[in-house]
Image (cartoon, rainbow, N blue to C red; front, top):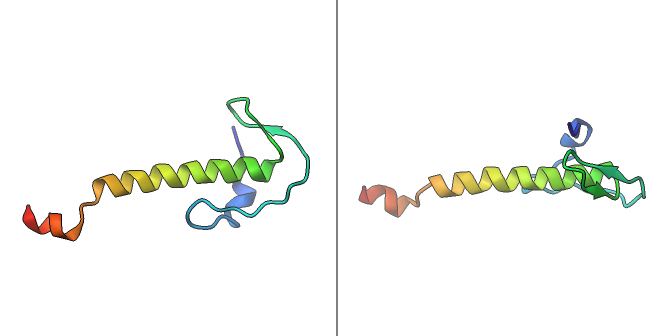
Amino acid sequence: QDDCSEFRSQFEAGGRLSCTRENAPVRDASGRQHINKCLMCAEKFKKEAQRGGGTLQRNKLPASERTKQ
């Protein structure tokens, strides 16, 4: 289980997380290696934001379409 709670407060909308580039390799739950834990979490947050944003966008009709129904 990935514990990225220490980075959640630094997370910006849109999946952005500012990380340093120190070399401290870490593997995620799938076994993929990342340069450090912050970069691993940044990728995780970005995927979470894309999943959430994609679902919202698909289910949300433009105002012009809502009035036609």
